[in-house]
Length: 439
Image (cartoon, rainbow, N blue to C red; front, side):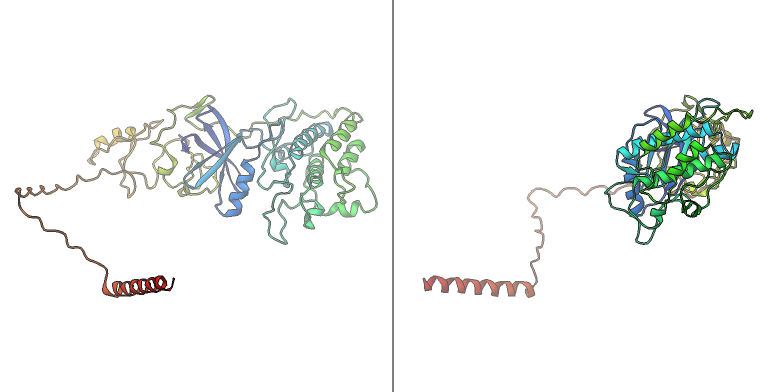
C-alpha cells in the first residue's frame, strides 16, 4: 500500500528523478486515475521559485506534458501530470540504435508542434534533450511524443535565477549563444531540436562544439545514412549563428513537411520500431482501476509515517531516489520495518496473540495484505496509550457568609519611576500656568 500525500495522492513507486525532485507513479483519489507526481527535493529559495514557475505552466497540447495540479503537505510540495509509460527517446535509442529517417521525421514534427505551442506562450524551454522527450507506449503504431520537464523553462521577460557567469542547461545540448551568456530565446530551443534529430538518426550523442568548424564554410555534406532533404532541415537547425538558423518552430516544421515528401519509404527489411511499456507492472495491492484498499483517511497522512530515508531500495530490490524526510516511500508489500511502531496492524496483532507479549491496540486502518507471523517488536517511536491523570484534590469548602475575605495586595510602580513622572507633571503644570498668565 502506498502512502498518502495531502490526503489525495498515493505515492506508489519512483519512476524517475530529475535535478529538482523525484517523480513517482501515483494514484489520484479525487480524479480516480494514475498520474505522475514530481516531489520537490530542495527547499532553497531558487528551487521553490522554479517550482512555482513550473507548476504555473498550463499548456493544453497533445505533445506537451505540462503540470496539471499541485499539492502541499507540511513542508513538502508536488505537482502532477499525465502518466506517460513509454519511456524517453533515450530508451528508444538504447533499444534500437539509429532510427529510420521517416520515423525520425514523425518524431521531429511532433516535437516542433509542441514547441510551437510553448513558444506561443512566450516560454523558452532551455533543456530540450532526449531524456526530457517522453513517448506513449503505442507499440508498433504511430509514435506519440510528449515534451516534458519545464524545471528551468523561463518566460521571456521574466527575471533569470542563474548567477553571473553561470550557464544553466545540459552540456552537449546548449546553443553557442547560450554558452556566451545571451538571453534565452527561441532559436536556442531549435538548436537543441536539431541536436536531438541528429541523435535519433545516428544513434549517438553529438560531440559539443563539432558544428562550429563544420559550418564555418557553409552547410557541410550530409552524414552517411541521412537523406539529403532531411539533412538540409537538420542543418538549418544546427547553424551556429542564431540569425542564420530557423527563427520559429513553425518555419522548421514547414520545411520538414516538404522534406518528407522527398524521402523514400523505409524498406530496409528490419522489424518495425516498437515503443514498449517502460514502467513495468504495478506493485501488489494496485490494479488497473486503482488501489485495492479503502481510500485515504486522516489516519494515514504522510506526516505520521516513518522516515522514508531509512530505505534505499524498494521491495523488489530496485534502487529508489532519495527524497525528503516527509515524503513517504511506496511499499509494494507490507514488511516489518527496522523500527516499526508499537501499534501493529490487526493481522500482526492476531499472529502475536500466542506470544507472551501483551496484546497490542488495534490499528486505525487495516493492512491490505496479510503479513507473515512475527512477534511484535519493541519500538521507541509510535502510538502509546497515555497513563490516566492523577486524581485532583477535592476543592475546599466555601467560607460561611459574612466572613471577611482578605483583599489582594496591589503593588504600585517603584519610586524610581513615580518620582520622575510626578516631577515632569509638575513642570508641565507650571508651564501651563505661566502660559495662561502671559495671554
